[in-house]
Structures are given as C-alpha cells and as structure tokens.
Amino acid sequence: MTVTFKPSSPIWCSGCGHFGVEAALKQSLKHHAIEPHETMLLAGIGCSGFIQNYFPSYGYHALHGRVVPTATGVAAANPALTVIAAGGDGDGYAIGCGHLVHAFRRNPSLLYIVMNNGTYGLTKGQPSPTAAGRPDQEHDLDAVQLGLTVSGTTFLARGYVGQMNQLIDLMNSALTHVREKRGFAFLEVISPCITFNDNFPSWREKLVNVDMDDSYDPEDRAAAIGSYARLVAGGKVPSGLIYEGDASTFEEATGVTAENSPAFQDISVAAHIDGYRKHMGMYAM
Ligand code: SF4
Ligand code: MG
Image (cartoon, rainbow, N blue to C red; front, side):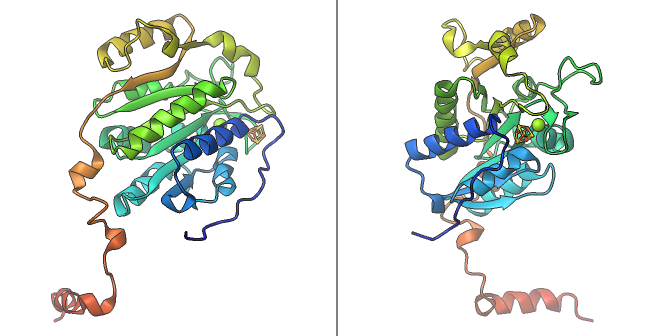
C-alpha cells in the first residue's frame, strides 16, 4: 500500500459538531472498506476545512470557496479515486455558491459534505448565508432546497451530528452513490459551532426526519419539492435522504474513465516529443 499521510489530532473546540462529521466519515469509509490510498479528501477554508488533516488519505486544502471545482478536477483526472470534498457553509454557500450550482448541474461523481453551523467560526462568529433568524442577517439560503430545483442533481441529503446513526447511514448511501458513478452526492450536515453559535438544543425541535415518513418518496422530485416547501413554510428544516435519482454525469459528458484517465497516461517527454515539436512548430516564424 502507498504510504500517504500521518493524521494529526483535531484542534476544534471541545464539543464542536465537526467531531461528529469526522467520526461519521471514518465509520463510513470503514463500512465501504475504502483504503486511504484509494481516497482523496479535499477541504475548504474554515474550521471545517481542518478535517482534511485528520484522515490518512491523499488530501488537498483548496482556495476559499474553490473546493468543489478542485475536487471535480481530481475526479476527472483519476476516476479510480473516491473523491470527497468537505467544507463549511461560509466557504460553500457564500464565495463558493456559484461552484455549488454548477456542480449540481454537472453531476460529477464525488461526495461534497457541507458542515453547516450558520456562522464563520474561524473568523469569530460573523453570520454566514445560513444564519437564520439573526437580526443582523438577510434571508438564509437553503442549499438542499436549491439543489432540488436543478434538474441534474442526483443525491441530496441533510444529516445532523446529534443523530449519528442516521448521519452514518446517509454518508454510507452518499458514498455508494459516488462509487457507483451515479454523480454528485451532496450531504449537508447540521454541525453546530458551540463557541460562536451554539444552537444545538434548537435543532431537535426544528428538524423533520423524512426518512421516518413512509409517505415521503425520495425518488419523486416533484413530490419532494412540494413536501420540502411545505415543511419550510411551517418553520421546519427537512432532514434525511431528500432526493436520489439518476441523470447523466460529468464522467459521461467528458468520456473519462478509470481506464483512459489522464492520471494513468504516460506524460514522459520521450513519449510525446514528436507531438510537442509539431505543436511548437505551429508557433515558429
Ligand atoms: Fe468548531 Fe466553532 Fe470552535 Fe470552529 S470556533 S472549532 S466551528 S466550535
Ligand atoms: Mg460555518
């Protein structure tokens, strides 16, 4: 096995929700028997981005808001890897929001975990795009609801670190979706920041677990849009598997497979010297 990286110990505040996300992801990688050298974990900027330091897999700390396009590039270059992007709501829903929308419509086979705590924890508690109900904040963004309205989405879910069994199940399903090359698995996790926005107690009241509702069909997008909107109008936040379906993927659009991926091509100068000379010759006077 390739020797990769020795993880360090988490430096999150005691009680931070992100410990739950780290534990669930470790459990899920174990469940799927995915080895560190078969995984690449990319992180965004913020407290949540530290998660990349705590896994022995290949890793990369992306520019602020750019974790999704960077992860898409990794998935395109080497489809043999299980690619996981992780970051926070500030990183993913503010500066990175445009990339999220385009990932929804491109549908690359990778898992994107957003740790939503309604604040910018690393910079000491400014309101983020999901900071609902604070007097200094505009209307909040619901990225799962946004994803429901984009026709290319294939996996949308919301978990909560206060409900670990469900979170692990959702993560297992998301990784199955990715490994079966069905496209973009989007998993938002409610992961409270106990230091700057400690709203742990409020989530038990607010979340409505659609996994427990036999009448809810996560494969019916139109019905899910209606059910979701009604819950939000009633002041609730849906959790569980919100939608799973099929749509053409980024891999199908680009034609890259594990067999022909750029990561496995011979890029030595000797193998390509004639081609390089031909192209350089086009610029010669
Ligand atoms: Fe977690 Fe908040 Fe502490 Fe950051 S500041 S580590 S988000 S509790
Ligand atoms: Mg945040």
